[in-house]
Amino acid sequence: MALMLLAAALVAYWAWQHPDRFGATLALLSPSASRDTAHPPGGDGQPAIPIHATTVVRGDFPVTLNGLGTAQAWNSVTVRSRVDGQVEKIDFEEGQPVKAGDVLVELDARPFQAALDQATAKIAQDQANLASAEADLARTKTLVTPGYATKQLFDQQTATVNQLKALIKADEAAQDNAKVNLGYTTIRAPISGRLGLRTIDIGNIVHATDQNGIVTIAEIQPIAVVFTAAEGELPAITRGLKNGPLDVVAFSSDGKTELGRGKLSIINNDIDVASGTIRLKGRFENPDDLLWPGLSVTTQLLVTTQHDRIILPDIAVQRGPTGLFAYVVRADRTVEKRDLKVGLIGNGRAVIEGGVEPGERVVTAGYARLQPGAHVAVTLDDKAGVAGN
Image 1: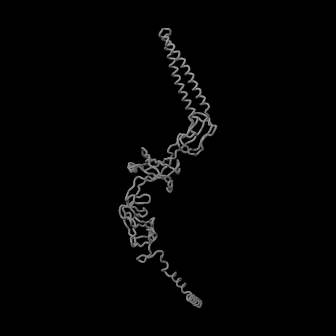
Image 2: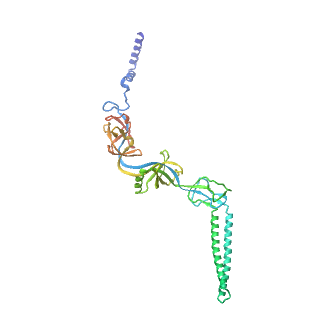
């Protein structure tokens, strides 16, 4: 008892010396200290519930179809030799861009030059024989009339001249063929694009029958993206094409990074019965080489655009026992539960066909604790919004 009296006396003395600290201690120990004071109380004395809200707007709503696809070279060529020969020079670096007509490989041209020279010499020989035969024919013709030469001899020499003329045409064809084969010893790029890895080295013998080729060229500017759409979307796509080419956007496989924008160029001529999808092909100019053959992408095809629609974020649309609804923030900072008639939903936005009007604010976060009439502390998510409005 004496100890308790002594302790009480010490507390009383400390309270008399520090009255401000004693009052703060009593306030912390009181039951009302646990009440939430982070937000000002509402009209009913309860603290306002913190929420995020956005303003309902009127604008354009793009109707898009999302899909999966793969980038492909717009054109792809495996460069092969047209003749058999030994590789003397390689005029390209692997992976570099090339233009159509650039020299890639040079073969040993000496055998083909010799064949061309031989064909040229054969033409000169047969032309000399033709000149002699034509002279004999002219002399025989003058002797036939007076009877110094027979008609049979004249006919034989005429046939000889015609045979030599035909032989010269064959020689000229052989000469052209030799020129073509000589030209094939210089292998050029048939298209513009980017080179792959080469399969031969200097000194190797290449053949016209080789299947692997020398190097591949892939045209990636432009590049194609092949993707799919559900067969039920085909009528909407064909209707959209009547107004012009449809826009296609390619994203990375996770859908976060935009890789390029292009146009829908081809709709495949049949539907895959097993999957119920149709293949589509988009053309992308690909100026930054962000799309690469074989790259997996996600696609977004703009089918049409609905104009002058009431739009709000789809996270504001809630599902309840009676249907879809949203909490609308009234002027007195209380919320009202409003039933909605929702149209299309896509890309994080929803078209509202009834229930809210442009300019009204709807709750986008914090609605778990809400009920009609609850007071709220609003943080606007609009770009121009100010927290606490």
